[in-house]
Length: 590
Image 1 (cartoon, rainbow, N blue to C red):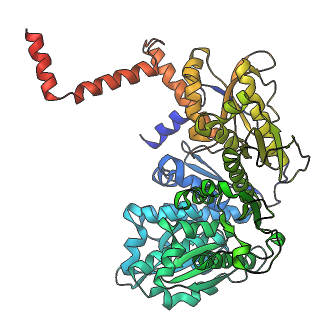
Image 2: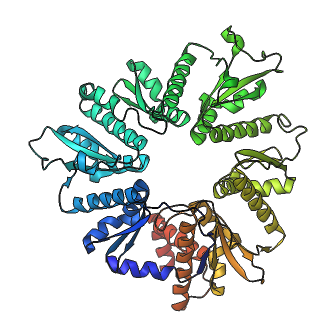
Image 3: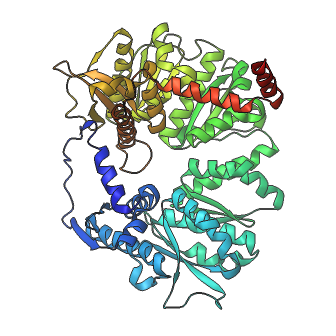
């Protein structure tokens, strides 16, 4: 489809369901140098800037921090933001467009707006680092929120050169993460290369960061140690990276820890405890005084259930919440330190959870929920409802009845996950007690979502005014499309919710008129996945589908389920064995 035709079809899709995004005007004062720059581009350049499904434009916007709008009819690119951010965005757009006609020319002096890292990649590793159709570089860009391309430096690039220059644009942390991932791949292809540039890499960006302590520490492993520190499919490395907040990467036999001083210290401590567990039980003295540790007393009879076979359950929780978790046993260590002994705890062991506050709370509540399933009352006996007025991170709790709990949980916990994702709150059910963890706005939003959800069991829900909310998109669906959009028992809305991380339902306004409300803390974007805008696009597509069907004279009775069943029947006919087909033909001849 030509670029301008795509533009027309996209603009039509917004007209099918009248939509009102209930975002209140921003009260944040914009910087003094906030402004708008425009770039006149060609039709081919517009296609390159837009990218497949608009993803390239979205990526440039995320890396630069600028608001970017492409007016495809006029072929004008509009860039909004403070002066430095606009400059970066224009530079990134130019780099993307230059790739269409030839090599990108980058110079460290002219193009470094405190956002550039340049590394030399040996010629024999360039193809390996790039990947088929650039897939490996694109994967790194997505993981680390960077923009990367091979480039000319002072007009020199190409065959006959021993190295090619790779430009990496982004924040200091993002650039370092992408750089080390590239160097890890290079070392696989050209062993020993990292040793030649090791100190240049370690010293890069030293002293930067939020507190001026940015740096890189190293640790060298033996072969067997490296495989343990890496873990299955790199799971252990990723866990240490997320829990500590530092960039953790292995290049050959060398582990590199990059970040501010405190983050690097945590990452190295976590690594040490990881290896200490090979020698026996580990106990962290002074854990009570740490700002990165939460300890949960797990009853002895629940330890196996919480841990899972070959530590699978605990590992899944670590992966979900980005934490490091292990059982501590002070008694077995025969060491000093504070804390009660095992007998005093009534037959329990201490489970240590390391990570940031939000991640630790999420993991802790999941552990509590698992323990409560195995040993009812362990955490909820005598618990009362509590609602905090603290504006910062805190936890509220309230008690659900039996029928309310099953409805708010959903099949395999799907409803709980939906409400958690849409509200931006940690939501966990420990027995019949719902725990809501987050800031005050998140907790109130989640409680309101649960109230609306439970109210739907009694009939239509009235949400009178959403104009002042920043988490809601309101859509007025044509009357003849409502059943099509909601689906049988709300199945289509549930499908959209699952795909976009939103909470959606039909609700009455103060005048008694029904409309569709899409709730999520994530506004989403015009082309990206997830959030309210993504849900809105999916709803508009369903409305279009229904209107097209009606214009062709298709009756409403021909539902999705009937069409699916007819496809299944046709497939089964095609799959019938030759002998059955022959039998049916012979019977017809008789």
